[in-house]
Length: 119
Image (cartoon, rainbow, N blue to C red):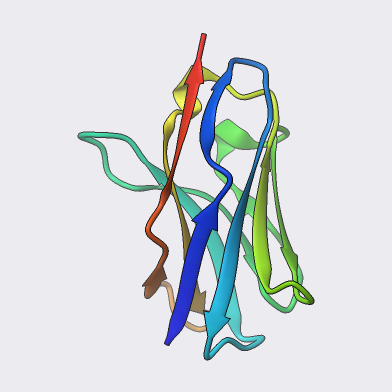
């Protein structure tokens, strides 16, 4: 089992920055891919970014490219999402998730953290 706990959400103005953090614990290992997703009411959960725990290529949804950066800190066992130049359309509940490298399905999810961006 892998436990994920997000933190760092809040309410900001458009153009501001926020840094989300996901504390990872449990039966972790290097064969996981860590991701961030987001969801707004009435919409499906949307992929935001991912990074392999062992390091390697990062992936972003087009709408956040150049503004968001995903990173992992193996020493602190955290996965972070630096969000710059925030827009009102970034408003959502953000979730940290994990999957095995050989699987397409994210099996482990955090409880989510609210990000609200006002214009």
